[in-house]
Image (cartoon, rainbow, N blue to C red; front, side, top):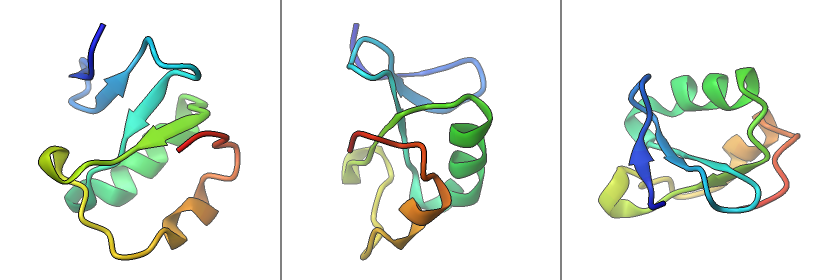
Length: 68
């Protein structure tokens, strides 16, 4: 399975280990809250999928994440 939007509109990569959530810069706080709420242990970002952060300081808000 490839990266796709889930029912809530977030990018997921469900068959990656661990299952991961896509981080979108224009929805950063919403993505971080969703990540914490659903206990994702992995996150990813890509410019074509809306990621354009210049630093990774936001990762401090999701300390359970083990994989980038």
